[in-house]
Amino acid sequence: MRVSTSVSRSRCASLSSLAARTSATTSLRRETASGNELLAVTGRIVNPSKAQQTVRDIRAELRDAQGRTVYSWTITRPVPQLAPGGAADFDSAAVDIPRGAKNLHLSFIGPTGN
Image 1: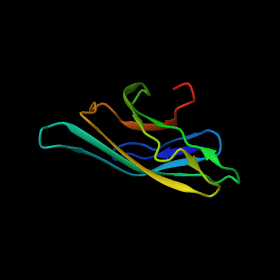
Image 2 (image 1 turned 90 degrees about the horizontal axis):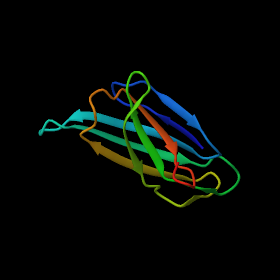
Image 3 (image 1 turned 45 degrees about the vertical axis):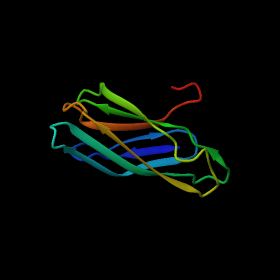
Image 4 (image 1 turned 90 degrees about the vertical axis):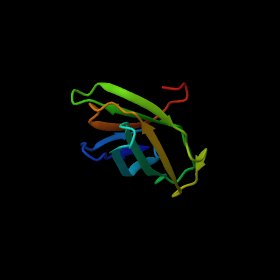
């Protein structure tokens, strides 16, 4: 599986793991009327392999300029399995994210929750 992401006002990051791919195609980072910062992420998981793949939940991490995780959350998998060549969209939002967050990193959570 491959994860690639982009965040407004951030750099791009990527991760490879197994055979499915995830890409965050849209991200929006803005301040709400209450003064909190909102980050919305949408993307697609794609299975480019010739075998059915199990889809795991996605761990979203916001990292500062030094690469330290400053905020994280779990994005629930949109489907449990993907057929060969199949795809599924996902979306998520986080509110009150730290202003020091510069990069978004997505990874699939392993079977033990890591």
